[in-house]
Image (cartoon, rainbow, N blue to C red):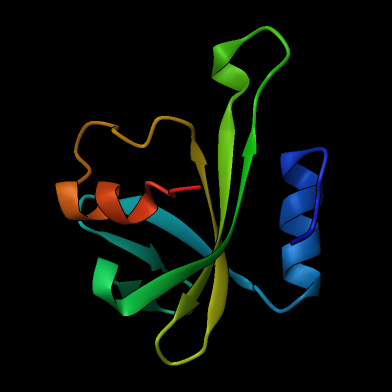
Length: 100
């Protein structure tokens, strides 16, 4: 696994390695309007995960997910840490709860 010091470095590194789709999070899916591509929790795997914590401000916390769809397309999802955000379905929360 790779090591990155910042969210920006992680996203840049993943994009250089073929994770070119920019995913967004919504209720029960992740999606990219540009592609267009919509994935439900059973349609993708998390192939890498990076967590970043701000030095003093919890608002600086973020998670970067490397996502691979069943059809092989790859992308990146960046979220604020604490994926239990309102409006996100339980199945998607469970999928994004990376177990170490």
